[in-house]
Image 1 (spheres, rainbow, N blue to C red):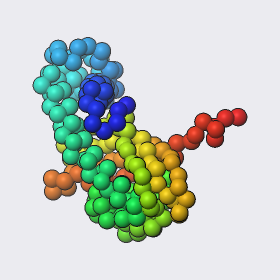
Image 2: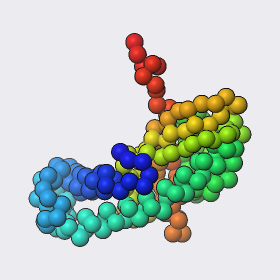
Image 3: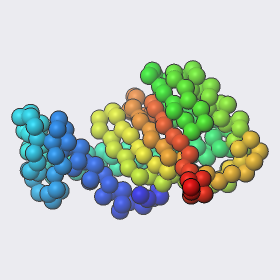
Length: 202
């Protein structure tokens, strides 16, 4: 895991994701070889998958990593700005981050909705309950992009007021993105609040 701005751990996570995603395609098993060696030897359960995987070169892997790093570089600063604004009562930047092309889904920590009309209304309601953001940070766990689809998994650390009461909390968030007219847009968000140790003690 890393906080935004640290490159080393993220690069390792991307390499692991690429290695595993190539290998498990259509029932393959993960490759444990050197990423800089080609071809990468794996076991696959179909001829087509085996041909694709055996012909994957180090350039293929680097291209996928470059694609993901570009996605992260474009999206994370926008997410940070949008959610800092949201926690200060302004939903407009969050709305701009989202696609208006269906299907759109929100499984939020406090609200869930389906469809742009309801999701956008929910973000307005949420913004009206948030204020006085002292800090908001994204701790990226993993991310990947290929073609016009991408995802990110992160912890969102927030200190802000919720309905006038100061709070500090962390959400676990998975988001799916679609590139539309050259711009990455969120199409799904699933978040829940990370329980504190005291809340989980028995």
